[in-house]
Length: 311
Image (cartoon, rainbow, N blue to C red):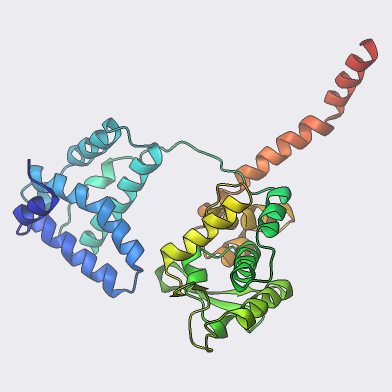
């Protein structure tokens, strides 16, 4: 059975595969991160190879080809979120082909977006946040770094790669200028407590980074994306939590909504291009409301009171 590299070689001259390689080159030229490029390649290339096996060119691709690919993905036991993401990324590639006038055929027009199960992942509780901060206690420079990092992510809702890309000069001001997805810039305020924690960390950091140098350091120098993710996981482990950086971003969003921020301002702070992405956090607030209703509903209190009296 041919491996992945052999399949690529076999399809290198196929019109669809050529279009795919051109698309990746343009994605890279637009300045996307290596992680984003890797994600596109991982999700779209299997779809392209599937089409190369079943259609001679882009004009010959039918909705049935797309639906069969999705069926195969589901048959492998992949989650509804993965299949949904497969569809979305494949459609991004095909829409680019349409814009570049490589074809006028759009098989996606008759293929509905796969549904995905709504899984509500809760934000951190105040007790869990306190546990994280206790896990960062200490005067060693790396503990000061850990505290500054946790506070920054909680205070701003930055994506982990956005936090990694910060330079020393970026955190001197009261407002961060953050370069987010798609190269879009946004302003994010920085609280006094976080700025103080960052300055304490920088003062203790043995690498003494200059103004234009990276902000985050580990034992062997400036942290990589994998390195800063490991730092977050280790902090969580010390606090007795299974922690990922996105939990801190989710906590920022959920707590902001609980305290009364409006969706549009939250969208701007988080760098969401689509308001629907921000709206997903409202579902967590619905759970808050249900619990509050159960605790404080006059009818529930009345019935509870009756049961206690008769007991």
